[in-house]
Length: 275
Image 1 (cartoon, helix red, strand yellow):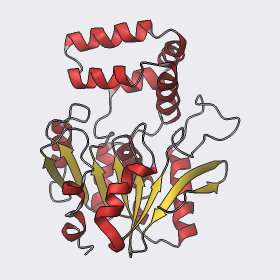
Image 2 (cartoon, one colour):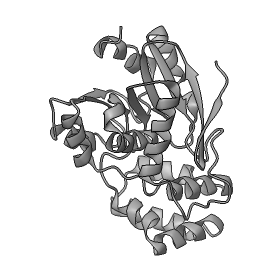
Image 3 (cartoon, helix red, strand yellow):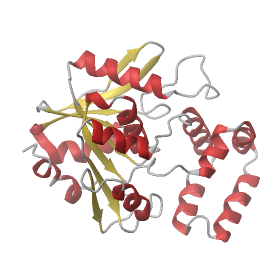
């Protein structure tokens, strides 16, 4: 695989890996806890038809938050836009597909909102950001919620009691309950949750705004979801697709959350005319 590189613009820098030399450019953003390696299956599946630019989100892989800046000053949508616009200019790319898996889907959706003229379309794999989560908003955007985040780093017992209680009420599924507890069962994992969720809390796309940009710029979104996914639920994707079925193409796979696998990825170039 090619070596990772660091791109800087203003106070922000982001690690990335460029694979392939094809005429179709894809900006790709991984899921929570992942890295540029999440898109290795796409590189293998899409081959020479595509140049894939995979990025490490902050606190993952080789990407670090700006020195001296804490998560109390989160990444702003305009900063995200300016960074990616500068990257496209640096690479001499007029338009690129925005692709994202899970957390990376939220980044791709936000980028489409902020930088629609440079987009060729959306490729979304079990993406976060299809609905605005009131729990996430309450915990990350307001001071009381952020205080709870800080407390859970060092005194997580209360956090586990809350998660268990919410699970018993049926507000979150057993799979999502397991997802939360598995990602917070030691100090390093809790620190990552704290840093990622708080640093990206201002990146919250408006699904209605995304659809308006798809129409205005004559773009299409391809949404790949697992029928058995209990993290990003199929009904959320169905509701999003109903906003504009002619532009939002829903692909349902007989899988759970992990939909970036060869059987899903390999048909994409032919389906999108990349072949």
